[in-house]
Length: 340
Image 1 (tube, rainbow, N blue to C red):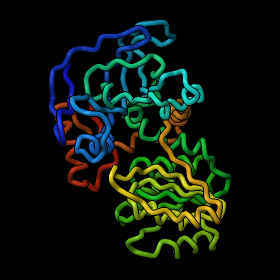
Image 2 (image 1 turned 45 degrees about the vertical axis):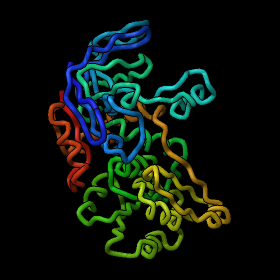
Image 3 (image 1 turned 180 degrees about the vertical axis):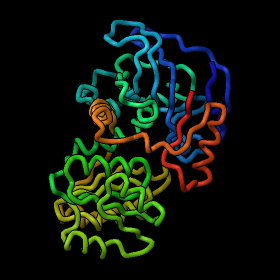
């Protein structure tokens, strides 16, 4: 079968590799569409050190079940998405549904597990999340990019009528904006640095936009909130200066979600005295186990639209063109996908 194999720093090669052999408790998935995540580009380019080549990446997967080895209520031919976080299944974290922080945690799409940039892949049966006909292949293929943001909001909570601020305009930031608004935030403030993205964040639910290239963010924020700042601030860029500034946007007793990941060698200065004296709570966001079914249900009932996330489509042979979008800092991309 055909696969896009990560073979070295910034190298992806289309190769013919053996079909997966199923163990007990695994299923074979025919990939229909795979989302291309910027994290994969960071890994293959050496910016993030996750796994080693050779490996088939791709952790945003829409597929179809073609074989099941073991007992299951799933059906052959059923369309699905893949919940990619794996754990030992026995530790305290796994029993809490937090296998992503299990000491033996791993993820489909990262070494040693192959991911969705191949025609067929094997996955544990319990990782399969069926989807109804109302959820398109495109929506399903980028659903994973919304799971962690949604789960972190489920964990931290969004107060009805509250003010939430989100930094950035990437897929995760758009997910945070949409879901925070859906969960009851009255004001969802988007902080960006690009004038041509103002329409984008508004389209996904931002009620206010602060462009830091055009104004002093704290001054405009005080005008929007009447000096009260925000109950919840979400950092979704990973840029050190943005991470540091986000603590200027949160009110006393408020919460900050850190989602954007800086490079491995980057250091960030946090205002420790402010955090302590103003009782600001900091929450890391990395989990993706609880939100799969709720997100499928939201798409099913038309509450959210993920199809509009997809701006670029490629075939597997042209996957390097998708990574070129990140290499060249393309301004138009929201999500690229690989169609099989």
